[in-house]
Image 1 (tube, one colour):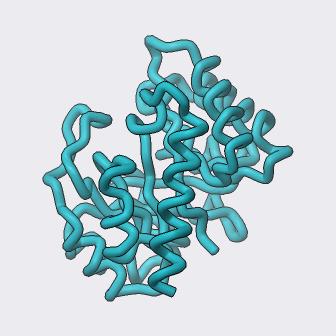
Image 2 (cartoon, helix red, strand yellow):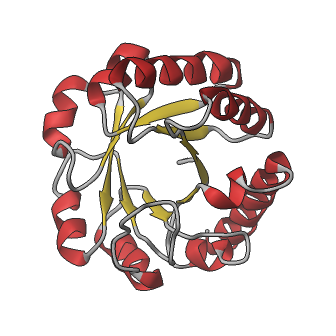
Length: 212
């Protein structure tokens, strides 16, 4: 079963990578089994180092670490895969470096992108932003729950919903058909990230069990 919570570790040049590594360890101990290292403005060498450390720190918990944007960094660091956006390498180009069993995930923001992603070898498809988000400087238009429903009807691939999701809205997102919710701010800014992660996992278990 695809992990219900996909935690995003957003590493910024102005911040110490130690905070992201520490958070990864805490979330792993709380039962989070899928995380993404996202470092949009980090130099490749630093990106590799942070990714490698995240993998080493969480490996004993069986966590899958996915690297954002960079299939080369993902493969060299020993990550579980890479996640690409619409302005990154195409899925099949990323697949040349991250061959199975490594994952290649792809972001989609409208029906056309969703339909195109369904024809690729992507292991999962992300849709969003479902709600307004502050985690990106220039976010795509909000797609609401409708694109999640469209995605669920269009493919059997795992669907990851992303963008402004909180514990107050997660149940509705899962009910719309998402297999997983990708969360950044609602976990990283929580007073108790482990407790917040546990809340998401409990919501997922409750909603997905009812639907199955």
